[in-house]
Image (cartoon, rainbow, N blue to C red; front, side):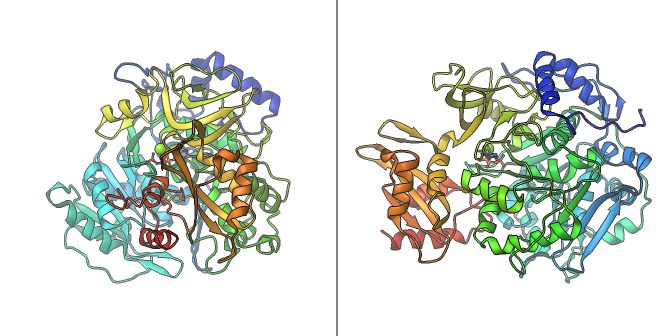
Length: 640
Ligand code: ATP
Ligand code: MG
């Protein structure tokens, strides 16, 4: 096993060097990816990169003759070279709740928990559910699973018992890590009680043998004898050392359910070797990682972004991560800006929905903070409108930080299309350029490759190391979902436009494309245009059947100030930004939009509400706030 820690290629590159890397990864992918892989620590180094195949049964296969352990790569090798470096800074939502862990300390805590898991009978390949708010035990839990070869499935703390039960049954989790109670601003979520109900709902299908309870608030919770144990009691009995399991690169590291924006969530399986290579490589490349960085990715760990850029990417690269438990504007607007100033955060990676939310608070809030430590800022999750991009750049980045809008998916494991900081010139609102080794391609609806400038279905012509291996226990659904629309290609489900010089613009999900009198319009195009109206903070466009036009557009808008809104301004903005044919049939003014836990707008729900089709609204468990649904229905009814 090699001892030295070698930084992945990507950080500190000039634009020219980056271009060379894109060329090399394109021309000699085997050589390029083996070089990247060898920067990790392996028990058996791989001799081959990809043996993936998008035809037939479909196989995603990376470094498959190699053996490694992911937690050793994220911890042990840094303990050897920089034991006292801070790995994790945690700040709770109350000022006095905080903790900092060096690599040595994080390693010890991970090992203790890994020993507990082993003692409780968790074996390599078993699935462990993690249902915790943003506390250190969530991250320790993920790394402890990785250490013993258990497959983690992180479940959103805000899920209902029903949502949890579905995922517990599907994953077959044998152990659950949960909290007594989770805090969310003033709200308290009785996590343990909800988990008890979820396990009860699984009935005979439940394989859960133990529930480990982390005391977050110290509240009293019902404990079932034998099954339920307190986390602190258990880890106190264990040693701070634990031998790591040797895993094949293809062994699953985790299973994670998609956001469910479009339907029943898919439990995607990510492997150990390819995923970690991709996490480390993209973290270094996209954010131009520097050893002194304080890296804050604001995503919840129950989202893929939280896996790759809160935990695995930055820790594989020996970085320092910041984890903040609370909301952006609780107890008061500007809370996140204060966290940045307090800890000297250098990289801030968040989402368009957060940017839109803080924009709404007005410029004084952000202008009264320094934010001088920031070096790179980024977003992920949805298209960001050019207007919001510019605001983020000017007000948060103070005009000096590169903004990285990053396009990727649960399925891709890490960033795929972006303007890598310091290497690619960004364009506000564009996803920009594919990363080295990403063979993005556009296909038209006949399945023909679109050359040069044009528009089409966004596909990948070849595998990349971070690609998900399968859907948990349902490889056929994996094959059908991603590899049948465009045979021989991975189909992302998104549409995109490409400029002559190769820059990509995501137009939205293909399912969301609206066809008005033969004009195909991406929802993102409409929403970008609506964003030009300064009275509107957020909007969502959907298509509903229309007798003459085939489909008509309906737009839901959230005004900046309650009661202040002029539909004519929206119509004008759309007519000017997209075309007269795209002027909406109907505009509904609403207080908020239905969103997934990761802040994505759930258009399928809005479509049904706009059509007054209230039967079978589908799986609402993926919504961050299911209570928004009756409110929306009432608001739409009232507006006719
Ligand atoms: P489901 O697949 O269950 O419907 P989901 O697609 O929302 O859920 P994720 O994997 O979290 O689940 O999201 C990936 C999708 O988010 C992408 O396919 C794309 O539609 C959108 N997306 C992510 N980042 C960006 C971005 N930077 N620009 C535009 N769209 C983005
Ligand atoms: Mg998806």
